[in-house]
Image 1 (tube, rainbow, N blue to C red):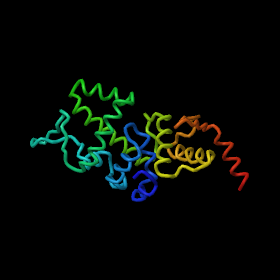
Image 2 (cartoon, helix red, strand yellow):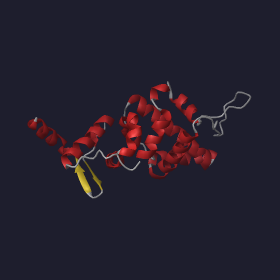
Image 3 (tube, rainbow, N blue to C red):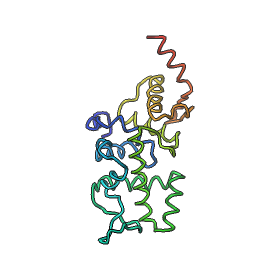
Image 4 (cartoon, helix red, strand yellow):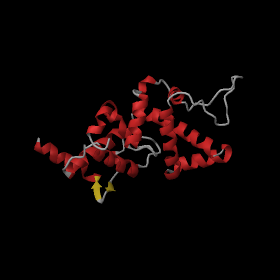
Length: 208
């Protein structure tokens, strides 16, 4: 899965990848693993249904009372549950919002249960961004842009010309509603100045 050929099996979900790689802890491969596990997000009428599908919902005692101590059902897709827990650990290490959430929960229920709770919250966020086709309100825009550039290189979709790379990147940012918030980003020693977009678009239109 290191080149464009390796991604062909995931073609039905490729358009959804930008919505997931914007989230902390999720890269190209983990995003594709999640999309392969859940399929069409329309299968899940609510975030609760998706959480239950992953087995990240709170367990219920025989008495019918929901476990408030952080235990989960562990039913459902163990592969999806696993990738979400992995993503949660990365998120709490690198993203201030999720780090603060984790520290607050860990002080109350312990680190292991807290990380499961973060994994569940991330999955709820995934349901919202896929269902609404929108940016995450806690997205770190420069990090998102770098991950999009990395995704383009991994899938073999990075055009050879700088101008074309710029326009393709801007297209993905437009898809997320983030294009107006990014002026430039540095990736592998190259600086992409997104403020040049209008000039590039005008030049392209003049050539048509």
